[in-house]
Image (tube, rainbow, N blue to C red; front, side, top):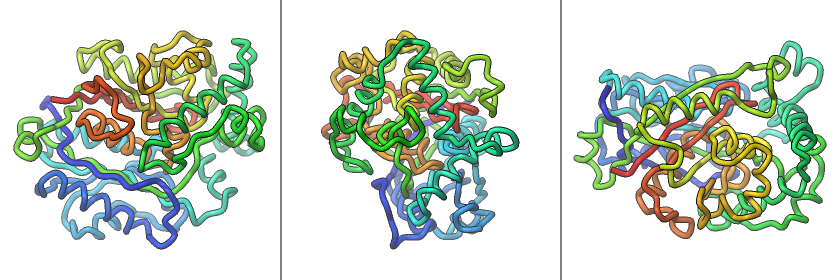
Length: 384
């Protein structure tokens, strides 16, 4: 396989873009990423999106968006894996370049969710869970994570306060990120006293939905050096899954897809988890952030709360995590999230992350999950 690098990137602030359409959000970051990469000829396009067909009654989204930037003969594939769509699209783009099929591809994650009601957003988000038995009986995505969180608290004898501390940490990072949807700090009391979403989840245990788009240009490493002085190589990639239904899980306190995908990516990269300088994990809920840190082997099971309190995942801690603010505070435009993670990691590795810049920042791991971890994609990025 060929070595693959990111030679261009772009993203917009996650927020509510009432005056912009889905295709305008897409076109803005796609064209900017192409320019950032030195305007190469694109051989193909991969788009991560979860919900446009539900919100806008539009199928064939890939062709629609490709047309919007004038690439009317460029092959374009829409990748839909719930809120793991962005990471899965990046994985497909990576494979197409690594295999030699294409030289230059663009991967874009885009989602527009602000014009729907909160209830509609939650209904569409819950399409990531098993529908025939779980959703049919009223179990939503919020409900499934509430069950997992309640069991975690019981099994490890963990206080709700620790989850509040995680939310506080994410907002602390987001406050320094100009692309974040919620760029402000909160207190533990704020997190604990917010309205209940699904007991024990409160509003600050959940990631906000919004509009957003992010893009990367991928190419062979040897060609990337012709277009940028700081190519970022994707040195490892892995994808794995778990059951769709929660009732089929042997253990709901671990997402097998994360541990398996990270193992594949690490073996591919010939690195150890201790070689990674920073992490962007899928914290759609505070409990999913806890499980990701445990499943990646970063923190002992049941000890994440104490680790957060001790500053281990802070900017200056030994395992800087979600310096963007994560899904929790940077925002979670569902199908775009995995590509946001790739761009945020690229900014870190290029030394362009501003007030949230990690040091050292040579290797990053990003983890994007669908629903309750039914499909997980892990990429490892390295500054060349």
